[in-house]
Image 1 (cartoon, helix red, strand yellow):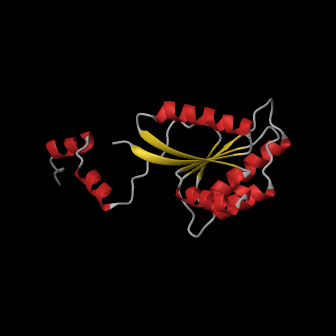
Image 2: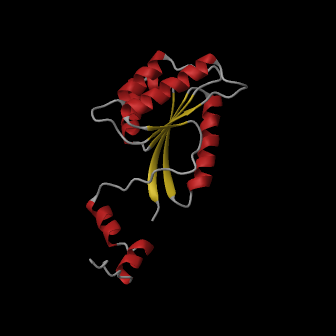
Image 3: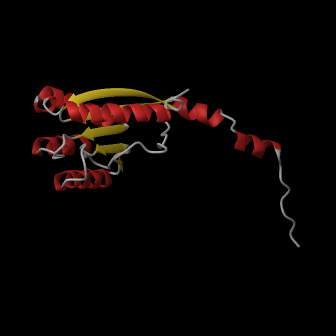
Length: 174
């Protein structure tokens, strides 16, 4: 059974949305055999509406991976920074991955570098991992349910099989 990851995509405009689509395509190609994905989308304009903003904050708090993409200038508006702080910062931190997709174009602008630095610091402050591209591997978190723990505890892996079948004699004391 595949683990299910919840993804939240937040983008500035159509160009930024396209960056997220490309990222998600690469993510699914790399992890399709291990994970299934549930993806929700919000553009920055929607987050100015309090109903959408509240819904998106709830999805952000539950998401395993949050993807944020900016337009070519790479600037986060104060409204989006405020939304991120409300959605992600809470008592005790949280697990998960924050992805800041750099704005497309040649070179890195000062604004884009500043945005990436802000997102990296935010992720580290709240206990999330930070990425700017598809990773080679993702941390697979076990769900917090008695059923999941029971399934994992009763599963016999190759390592467990070796331990059970090959008893090693204890060393002798001289």
